Image (tube, rainbow, N blue to C red; front, side, top):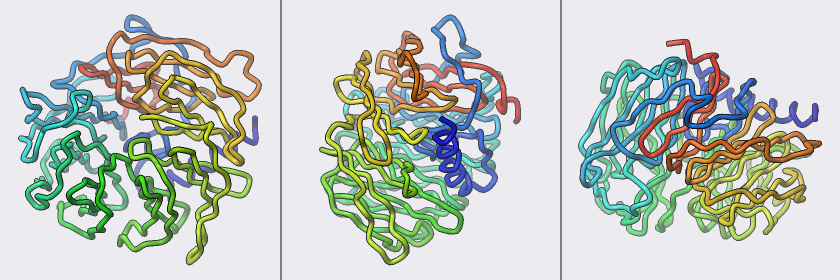
Length: 415
């Protein structure tokens, strides 16, 4: 157990090193930028709509994007209006749940999408200076921490061939002053790096056309960084400051669930979901990635994998949670949960949290010798499609219409 926790801590340190000014307890982007893993302690084990809720805040519209939390401020996007043409970014005091500011934009691109999703589908990204939002209408904007508009881009007007009738969903990556967005559709496909301070293009990477909702994954260790892009055709890693290709691996992968970083005996791994999950070891400069293992037993659906304590966790369309050893893919155990699941699992403090579409969270004991896998089932009574955030010894859960903080104190008090 001690070794597994040390491995998890070491991997977290690699991710955290890339976020200048972002504290270890922050959750600055989709899945925290760390594959849904937190080093927070004292996380809650039981709650309901009436008990264990520190605060509950109403939201001005619906959405399926996840919340982010940076230095005591929580950010969440919403969409409202008959056609979800009104776009919202809301900043909430993480300690008390009060709305500090709200900014609204009109959608300039198409707001047509599947009824299950929303224009507020991509998760925002934040750092101590700014909060950046990308909406499914291909509108992007950045604001200072106090809500002053820095810039706004109508990307559908700049790139009119980008069109997805089902809805866009890939979340942006904020890295060292760049906001990296993935817009991949049947009619046009590319990854675009914007200056986070001005909104101007820094680089544009053409991609093979095809609908793709997978969010890019940033891997960073010291001075080495790689932006890993997933599509149904495989993985490609690029240098995030320029977009230059580092390596590529062809495989039949998912277009919804995203890749995640993990750790095996031989070092860092990238776990990518598809017809079978593959585990790749990133190469040294100029080399080729190594396929460490493949497994058709560790399959997912909408939810992405989580790698925590040397173990990979994935929940499939039938609601079966599978735990496998990250270093070789061996399945260690399976547990049937009440599904279906759209939100990806998150983990910390020896627990894995799986929240289903009805808003019921299964709290899983992640200790290797746990006598009981499911510690508790915790209902909120509202639909949940967004992955939770972890910060300040708490879970932050956005339902379709509300924003909850579950659990205790910590860094939420800092403004």
